[in-house]
Length: 302
Ligand SMILES: CCC/C=C/C(=O)SCCNC(=O)CCNC(=O)[C@H](O)C(C)(C)COP(=O)([O-])OP(=O)([O-])OC[C@H]1O[C@@H](n2cnc3c(N)ncnc32)[C@H](O)[C@@H]1OP(=O)([O-])[O-]
Image 1 (cartoon, protein in one colour):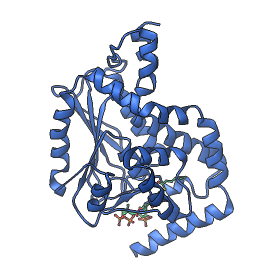
Image 2 (cartoon, rainbow, N blue to C red; image 1 turned 90 degrees about the vertical axis):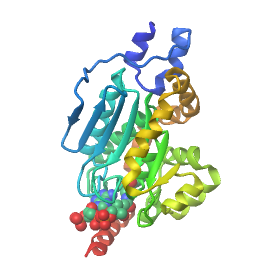
Image 3 (cartoon, rainbow, N blue to C red; image 1 turned 180 degrees about the vertical axis):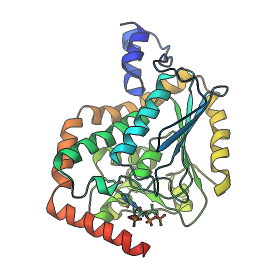
């Protein structure tokens, strides 16, 4: 199969190593533009993408009030926006950030997992998988500009990126706190965290459902850099320049080499993972825990 055809059918890192075997050489070029992306700004209701053609860098602003919770609809928008950028060979880097004050993302939308039919839960979980596969397997340089709290799925989203810059504000927190809700982070959440901070730290963090302050997150390597709140986005853009200086093919293949085994593990088990999730999340005891957690969120607000 010609390299271009490989790229067209398999954008993202998942297909990158296999492109090598099918092309016979290491010219890992970006996918051709299937979707013309010549405008400098595009907006869905919940996502705004600013693309600077001169630098080849796009900034994706999450703007789903109040807390950028990752609902089925929002995840779909995020995936469509990412796919468009991935297909545009002139886009080499992506910064993801939040337009909501104080919050990067509150994680998966609990309302998509609470009191919903098994069919809805399955659709929702497929969208969560899709988001993770697309971000973790992106060919682009991805930087998370974490300008607020980022629990659970929000932390996962930031961990899919190549680099994380967080606002140095002790009121913010980041981590995989699923056990605190009485639920369990699936194996690919766990794998992503292990790949980021190591096995022992992940084991403790997951069991205790730890949410880290920015300073603690920096100490364990969950984020790479802390800056003043006002500097998160500009620092992300500056950092991007350093990453852009590396030849794409070498960086992409290296990223793929590091991430492919983790990606393949979910890609080969998607259906079983959906079934597991649905079976787990629809249990009475788990629904009860989620209901209590939602109540707690509301009480805390009052
Ligand atoms: C196997 C499954 C794996 C699961 C992975 C996950 O990600 S599980 C997810 C684990 N995620 C968490 O544990 C994070 C839970 N959230 C938080 O800790 C805080 O909201 C915050 C720190 C993100 C922001 O604090 P803040 O003071 O700026 O904001 P606030 O607290 O005042 O909330 C405003 C409104 O948003 C609502 N709402 C919030 N989050 C969610 C949500 N995920 N979903 C839906 N709704 C959510 C909240 O109820 C309130 O609604 P109301 O009363 O207006 O109708």
